Figure 1 (cartoon, rainbow, N blue to C red):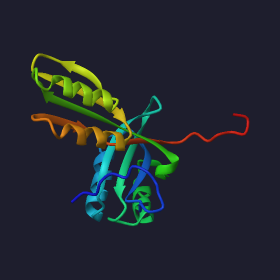
Figure 2: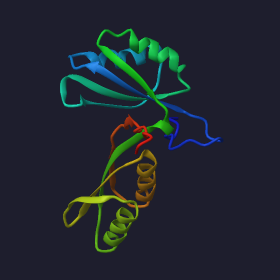
Figure 3: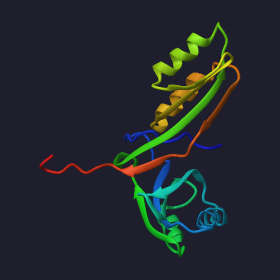
Figure 4: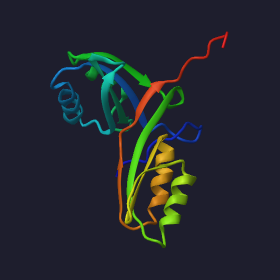
Length: 179
């Protein structure tokens, strides 16, 4: 069973995931080599997102959320660092990172439940992105915890088709003395 996503830091909550931001050369096969490395070593990937980095077509940023219980972080980073196309690896502690995820859900609606669906979307900060007479698609771009809450709230409705992206994360901005 996959552990629930980590949504914050407290003294009582152990860290179950590591967030790695990996800058790689944007070349064919790089993602396959990264995934293969994790598979060969038995490391569990909880979430994976890839996109071009900072508008530079030469590089991509791979955000990997790793199950902390499947392997020591040092071992994961060491293995990733050996890959030729890896340029930089940053371990982002949850308290030092801004994390976001995208959730899309299409729900069947009728006259009886349309208002309830719209209320759940509004109460959870989701937007309506598509609608017809028989269904509504809602979207939430937010923290993993906010996506968890919306997903939970949508469980009571029948015929829900739901998709979530992997997390993306960047380091929090450091406050300067003059700010």
